Amino acid sequence: MIRNKITKNQVKLWQCGGFPRSFLGGDEQHSYSWRENFILKFLERDISNYGFNIPPVTLRRFWLMLAHYNGQIWNGAEFAQAY
Figure (cartoon, rainbow, N blue to C red):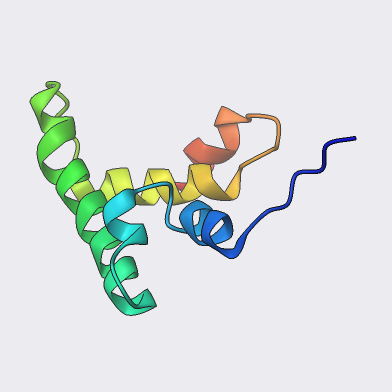
């Protein structure tokens, strides 16, 4: 019987979103800062490169709403009411 033992490093990598630079960031504050900057740049620069003209603040709010909906049945009407 094979048992999977989850190590502290695996848990930390999971909490860092699987990003090596966040994982190797040293302390928690640097790791969190790296993830925040990554998300900010993605919403500001990368999404607009795909042709979407949505303000980064609106996209971030949408992402947060999606994150809180994890594991639930999608109800688009609830999202529309929240805006």
